[in-house]
Length: 249
Image (cartoon, rainbow, N blue to C red; front, side, top):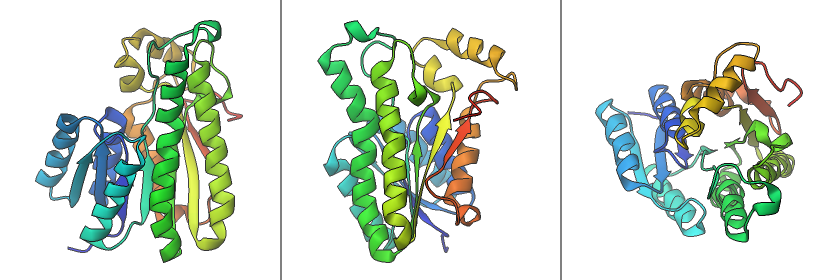
């Protein structure tokens, strides 16, 4: 069977990553998936395999270069190429809400690593393959928090830096055929709810113009478009998925 693209996805075992993986598999892409949790990763890989998809998985910490390197290597060995990368890995290390004056060094560094370093090492490792092929798509997953978020300054700062990294890479790599964009989700049901703060998601939905929170499939919709050839002339852009809130983002 011929697959249209080979796509790498970090943090593919979580709700958002799994939704993206299933969506891209359903449209005919081969997938190389990463997650730090082997059981979560195995569940997604097995499900896609049962549905007839072409997939491999590698458990590991997405902030480590060795993880990115080994996943790229595995994809190239199996399919001979890497056509796209989706950086889903992200979140908050330590308590979800911490005032800036109380934030400790360990949670700051770990959160920056999770949101920014993970994208950097995966972009560099996958990007080298794409640069050699003179073509590829990279989609980073950001957050509306990048514009400033009370009690989550470490998260907001790292997502703002990810936005800047996205645009810098887009400018540098456009002449060599690589599109780099970022999806900016607002509150997404399973991500924040998994941290025990589901009421915040409900409050967010009550106040956005469309009156509903994001589901993981809403993010998968945006990623599918940005990975596809329909976005071939789009790069360095932020696609906000936030129920009509934050229209200026």
